[in-house]
Length: 136
Image (cartoon, rainbow, N blue to C red; front, side, top):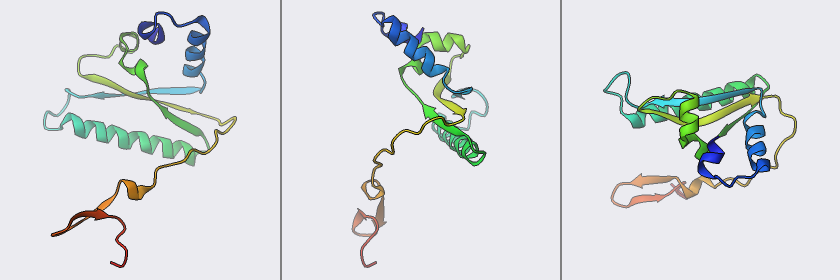
């Protein structure tokens, strides 16, 4: 339904592919953050970071127990079809899906970014310098 909502011309094959993807793992969780409820002192950005930490712990736990797990996102998370299916209220944001199951086949390893591209060191009087500093 989410696919048809954003693409009325989606073929039956594309719809079946989307359905199969959603049902691929035996456990499919939807991670939702309530950005408005609860303690008003907790900013929505803090709630998002906390949810990310919880998801990471869930993925690590699944791996430690010998399961495969994956986080997926996409345009379906903003669809009215998905919001209605899960009865999401005002201020509730669907962040991602987490799939957990037994690994049948592994994907090839992807190239990952090099940390030095994103990490720096604040040096007084010199600003942010590339990390790690050579010779320091």
